[in-house]
Image (tube, rainbow, N blue to C red; front, side, top):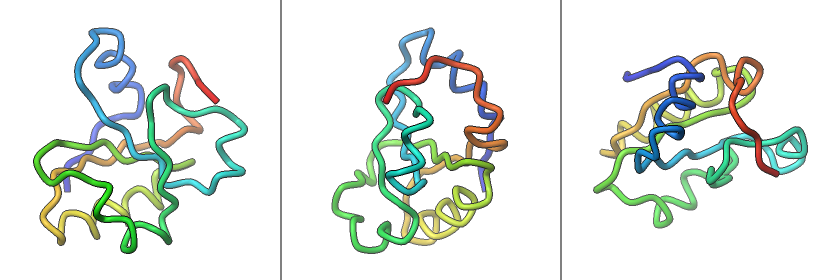
Length: 99
């Protein structure tokens, strides 16, 4: 399983790299902020929303602490997706937050 520290995504965003983040938290958790541009697909909905995820591009997966995102990464890897876990989760994220 691929993983990077949550704040490494800040550098990628600052460098205007083409990154796509999937936030697997529940919608009410996003009230505390999210990574700008992240799409929200709660963990329990991922199996039903695979059509929204392009197998031809890499994704970074985030949650609050890194546990749910790890589960999502394992599932998506088994489905053939290029995914990376953002370890530490939003609890340790120090970049800009959108809502």
